Length: 150
Image (cartoon, rainbow, N blue to C red; front, side, top):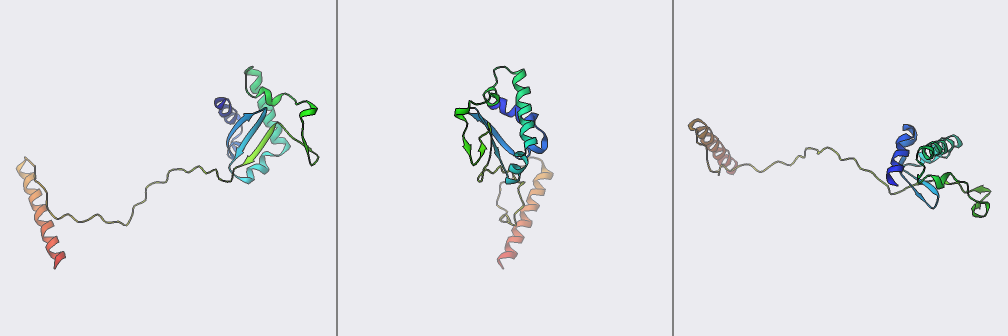
């Protein structure tokens, strides 16, 4: 079911897909969950709904056992709910107030300064030149620590 919904979203235009977080089918009603209220204005247009219905018909033509077959079939008149002179459609749009998709932000450099080294470390270098460089580094660190204390 989720794969078919993802496939449907992939077939939709990029402008419409931009507003849609995900979709699902329940009891013959295709529900699109939108990320922004402006997407509701865009997708509620008759042209957008007709595009979606056309995609569903094409999708069901190639996939006979599709979950969208129940969405395309017209409901009997006894099951249609009329609310304020507007009949309930098989396609529904919902704007989710709390739906947030966060993209991981790059780690920012903080102003935190690592504590200074005190020059207390083991010199495990086997090469004599490298050993001498580490000892010079130790002397520099010890001098800086003595200056900081004064």
